[in-house]
Amino acid sequence: MKLKITLCTSALFVVAALGAPGLAFGQGLSPTEAIEQWGAAWQETDEKKRMQIIERMFAEDGIYTDPTSEVIGREALSAHIAASQAQPSENTLEMSSAVDSHHGIRLRFAWELKSPDGKVLMEGMDYGELDEDGRIKLIVGFFGPFPPLESE
Image 1 (cartoon, rainbow, N blue to C red):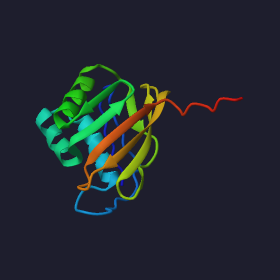
Image 2 (cartoon, rainbow, N blue to C red; image 1 turned 120 degrees about the horizontal axis):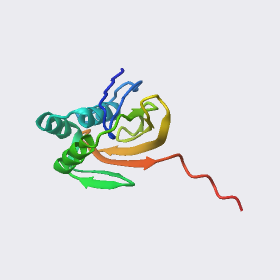
Image 3 (cartoon, rainbow, N blue to C red; image 1 turned 120 degrees about the vertical axis):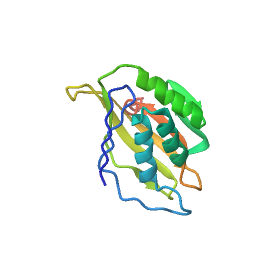
């Protein structure tokens, strides 16, 4: 399945080459479907529509955190997305891996921040967990490559 989402803000996702969905339990979203909806929420500029997406894919007390921010709950996530969308930027954030998951609830994916000419400005990865209903309960973003081992 391929999903492409574009928006000119600092918080932009282009979601591509996602793996096949599959549920571990319950009637909720698979890890891949949850991240597709995650990307759609970051792209949606209409507050009401964005909240509808967030309610489907994000736990009521879900947490999003990265080195620059931490938000808890659906309303806080929607406000954070709106604030990101308000910052003018022509850079794009693109997924650079498929969603990798195990046990049906833990997931990770890689991404790259690119300039309009396609130059990679930053890379990173996000780790997440789903709740028993298949909603995202945690997304932890990391910026940059893994640090090198220190030589002794």
